[in-house]
Image 1: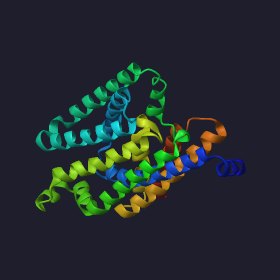
Image 2 (image 1 turned 180 degrees about the vertical axis):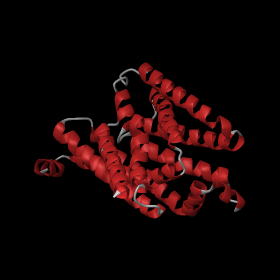
Image 3 (image 1 turned 135 degrees about the vertical axis):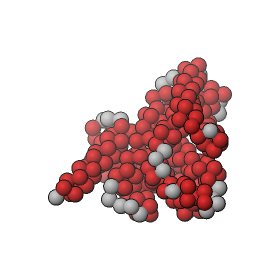
Image 4 (image 1 turned 90 degrees about the vertical axis):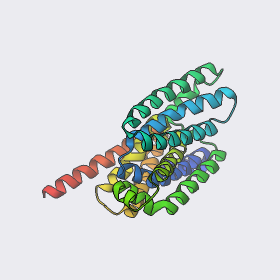
Length: 273
């Protein structure tokens, strides 16, 4: 640990990675809590994989992949929200279709873009150790957008997550709230794209929050614990990547998965005792 601490003081890329990991943990704690409570992990997976289409098209046209990912993610949320209202029975089919189409379009356009084929792996599995300082400002802005949105709509999101029928009786605009909630998820996906990649986004979004729900029923407490667990996972992944020369994204997810399994075992045997 001493060598890592020394390197952290010396190398800006490690400092950037740690800041990016902490920003990702905040977004995961906020958005991941509602993903788990409302049981929309499959929707989250669809958004994260479809985003690659926006990345590929943006790179091919000479635009920022960050902008392409954000535009695609937000477009996907609106489409899903409208389909959920008018033809809910077709939502899973649409998610699966957009999942496959988005991945295929992204891979195709990145392949057709000279010099960008190698970038595919970084988009799929993340490259947190390569995050430049400028990207941290964008990640912080997205974090702020997620935080403000959750703060404004917190009670409505809780009602939508726990009892959608009660939300309807109360006259809450369910379709609008669902689209806004998916928008929060979409922003978080874009935050996590550089940290763990689009393939592993769903894991880091769900595992910390799922672990927190094992020991708490309060949404506020779940958000706090999920953020802390996400921070521990990202730090451990960065540390493992630096010291063991392994990919940071998968290392983060493995730590988050291990914490979830440990929590599950602790809760199970604790009850048995």
